[in-house]
Image (tube, rainbow, N blue to C red; front, top):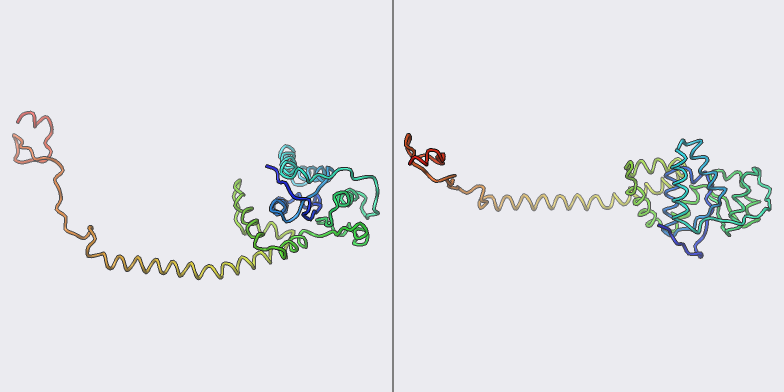
Length: 255
């Protein structure tokens, strides 16, 4: 299922090192699908992602290719081509294609874990800022934290093979976005502090209502009324004994 995003949405280039961690990649792409931003990447970024998944994470190549194919199918407009051959003078020449993808897609943000390899002066000259996943997610958090709640809850609910709890997903996100997870956890705790008293009050009211019903209906409950037991079968007279309930067919035939 593809996600069609409007061109008016702010775009951000996702570096390979933020696409490798499963929880972080899932959260970013779900936020993109919800309309927070438009993700962008190049074939060089996806190739590096697939290579890292296989060589460093140990994921089979078949699963790594399927993951990349799922990303391309979900975001068909995310791939950036025509990067050009210009260089920007970055400390690591291998990161030139990332900044080139940002310039080609007119993205103002590069989300990367190696933000030190993208000096602020060089990126600012191209109108681009390199942000860590923590800083980027905090920006999205301040824009609409209520929608981010629903996105994270949906991420937890979609994990079924194997299923994971909210705390497990937050721990995985905390490795790369600690401040964002702290804000999210505090917000969830505040919501629970408001909701739990109401839930306890409802439980107490239901319990009191149940006890009152039992106290008022105890005298008239059919379970406490004397009931005359019904006979299980008709009485038949046996040739050997007196009245017997449910005489066998063999003995009834002799009557």
